[in-house]
Image (cartoon, rainbow, N blue to C red; front, side, top):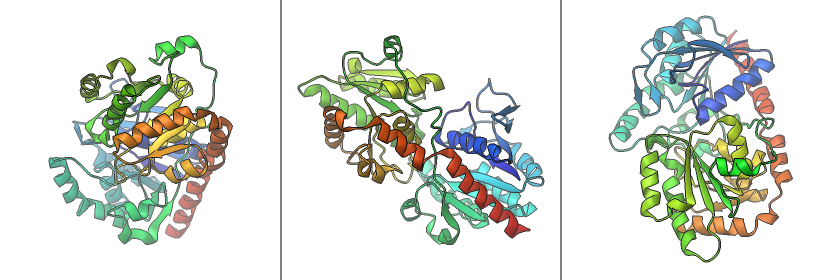
Length: 388
């Protein structure tokens, strides 16, 4: 089948939806589908056309971004042209423009439409008003047009403010993790120092884009929790913050104000090879997400677990219920600095109880991309049969 994927961006741009689209598309190609991705160029070094892991990628120029969405003037015409040749269009929320024009193209051409609904669209201040208007207009059109709406965790149908009216066409198709890429490896001492970790104290790792769209990841809460850990007796852990973005200087200033700068290292962007190394160096991966509306899944949690690293997160992350039931780490109270610091301290003191092999087996058996892609392929084929 010919599948047209329309995420707003695609690797080498880093992000949850971008990783999802790449890894899922790669597996779909392995299953025999022809997959084309239509997206924004986003990075100057990216080619306009190329093939990545068997996936044909076509990138368009944009004139700027509104929140997470690159605005591409060519996109409405390009997606319509591709839609005429596609058997399935697969688009993604929370990125208006690409999702909405994909829905329009599907309606005009009669091509079946799949929407993966990663999380609700919300904003801060003025953007919150814009998001509210969008959610009551264009979003409703896109979801009404969709033949199938996919969510990555069952709870999201209840927690989302907008999915309940479309419940009859909502189906769960879990995220996955590349268990061949993210795996336990031997770590060299020079890599520990090069990436900003410590050879003398426990290491914490946090990873996110550092911009206003991703403030819900809770880095400010983690930095405040670090200040409490510094005040307590015992060895203060080292926190490495991976990821770049326009808020990086603000977070660095906050670390200074809290008196934890000497215990926190901001690495900026981390390449893939170093990312696997960082997960392996860390004694604990921390993702204190704040909003169930915005945190659709928390793919980085699976990446850490696949490397055998326990996690501290919150109940809003997609696999939170399994974190405790499978002894993969601990949950802190959402937005609670004291709870986060105590949970980190508990995990570091009881790290011997965590079994890296169990974490690895959990990811391999429940969250492999191959099984998720097989489920998605079956959904595609069923939709295609219904349309013909």
